Image: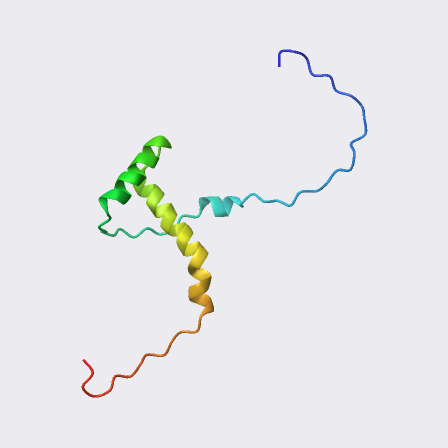
Length: 95
């Protein structure tokens, strides 16, 4: 790329308008509220995420959080699209 760029005065073919796909600045600044929880995971899972996090120079807990967020986004429609089941009444003697 050491050569000079030569520009020509040719007409541009058929330009196309591309839909704006970038998030708005407000969307970029938005941060969800975090809730701290304690969870017990299998050693196998933690070792997996620690290894992948080291390969990608990130934190394993962040990867797990993003995985859970992605799962929720994919399945949130299932929760809101379903009619809530009415609570079942317990009969006498049901414990």
